[in-house]
Amino acid sequence: MDIFINGVLFQDNYDVAENHGFSHSMEVDSWQIASLLKPGNNIIRVEFEDDPAAQTHYWIKELMLKN
Image (cartoon, rainbow, N blue to C red; front, side, top):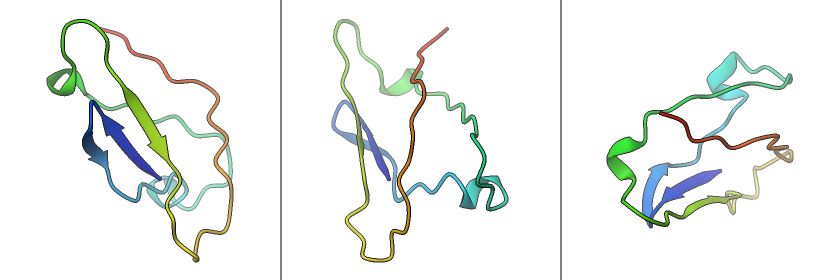
């Protein structure tokens, strides 16, 4: 999946399983994104990769911003 923050590509072709030892369990990722945030409203967009090799769906349980 691709993750954009305020129109800036933050993660390109991110694969949860690949980044967690090819796990098929629920995984938790944490990233520092403060430098991409601005005062007021921010837009975080998650897009499924338009790739014929994609073989699964992602189930996103929660998105959280904290300081």
